[in-house]
Length: 165
Image (cartoon, rainbow, N blue to C red; front, side, top):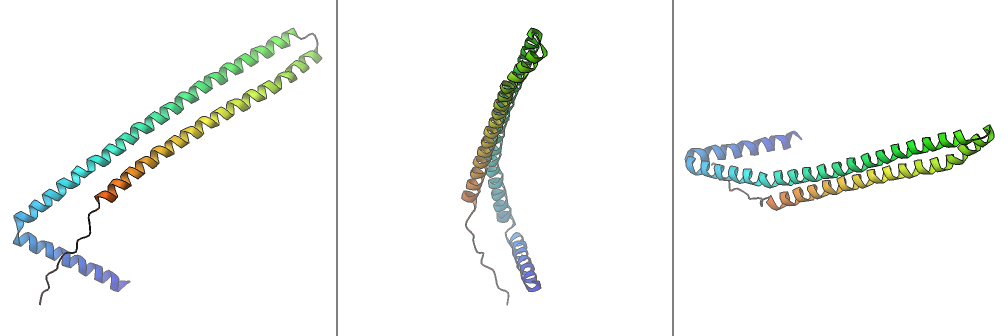
């Protein structure tokens, strides 16, 4: 491990020394190459920024659609709960005896249960769809960034080192 670390440090020292010699021998050319490579690096960032900005717009659209669907469902839940409560009160007022009251209320329990199950199923469906859409946006963004990164990776060039004797 120590030998590997020492070897790595030696390579870094050699590379740094080579760059220093090159800067000293050809300062203008070295700075031009540095400026060109820096400009290329900055230009390549524009594409990544656009990909992330586009995915941000998609995420906003997905979350807006999910919020809209959940708010509409909430409105329906509240409306149906109020309607069911009013119906229970009407039936209770029309009951002629306690037995009729209990039977009417028990009869309405099945409808209430079905309504609650339906509403919960719809909420889970909205959340599943939203999760699927979020996953699709994330996968698409990841694939685009990885694809661009793989295309932008230059070939490894081996520098010829000057051997001191």
